[in-house]
Image 1 (cartoon, rainbow, N blue to C red):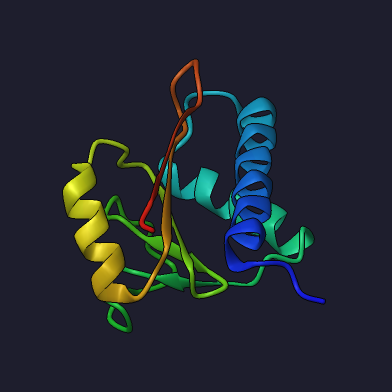
Image 2 (spheres, rainbow, N blue to C red):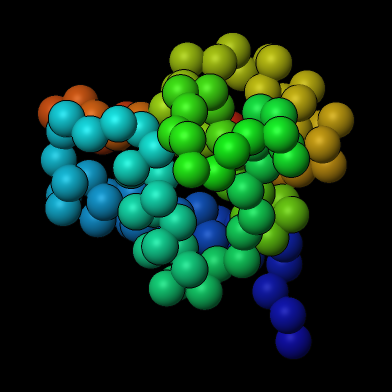
Length: 123
C-alpha cells in the first residue's frame, strides 16, 4: 500500500526542513547562499530525496561560476525548494506552482543568526 501524496509530501517537507536546520547548525551565518545550497543538496542526497536543479537560465550557466540568481531544487517533481529568497508573494508562488505542475514550495534563507523558512502549498 502506498501513502497518499499529501502524506508523502509532508514527510519530504519535514526531511527538507530538518536538513536545512542541520546545514544552519553546522555552517552558521556568513556564507554565500550557493554554499548553503550545496550543503543542503548533499544532505538531501544522503536522505535519498530525489531532486534536480533548475537554474534561472537552465543550460546556459557556467557550473564553476557561483551566481546570486535564484536556483531551485525540484524534489520528486512535486516540491520546489528555493534557497535565498523567502519574500515572494504567496499568490505569485501559487500561480508558479500551478503553472509548473508542482504542489508545494519550501523557501529557506540561510546566513542570518536565525534560519528563515516558509512553506507554501496548493491544494
